[in-house]
Length: 265
Image (tube, rainbow, N blue to C red; front, top):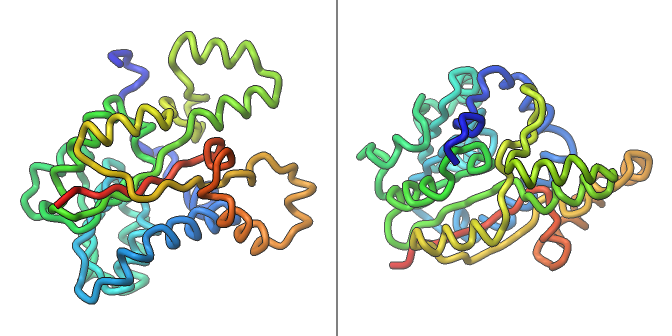
């Protein structure tokens, strides 16, 4: 992908929108419920402190909880504005001794000795904004120790295709496929390069990962009408999302895919 439209996305201009649009509300509750469930066996079974690298961690909401649980977190992002929000959170939660903030792109992390030998690398909703997502997975692999884990989420192109089909936006769908470009207007949070599960699976295998867990995040939430969704208790929706998150065909159409991947020992 040499087209300049695919240069890695920096969210300095949209940092203020992430708390409400991505992390907050029911969408955020579903995301956290799935991630916490999938990672529970790793972060809770260990009696020792884990070394965790959050690559492209943004404001660090998920990583902050891991730091609060006693783990050592290195949070890196290319957006200075995102890191300002993260720094405020570190200060508010008194996590200065457990969180290190790094103003670095994902591609620079593998060369940093302080980050190598990580127990867990987090890369959530980053790949779909990169020019070279395949290469990024190889770079993340180099950060992990044998037996370490990668928690990877990415924007699912099948969900975006289905949304356009639902709306009858056939011409837009065909144009996106023909031009291989999916990004919206400059202020849109729709990624420029949503990914297919089969691509990511091949890239992970090529990089030397084995997938141990596969879940969908927001399998049906986004397809509900607001009128129906608003009538239901949020907790009931979260519970049903958890129940269906690892079942096909529902997870195949989830807005995001979560893959927990391990480096063989």
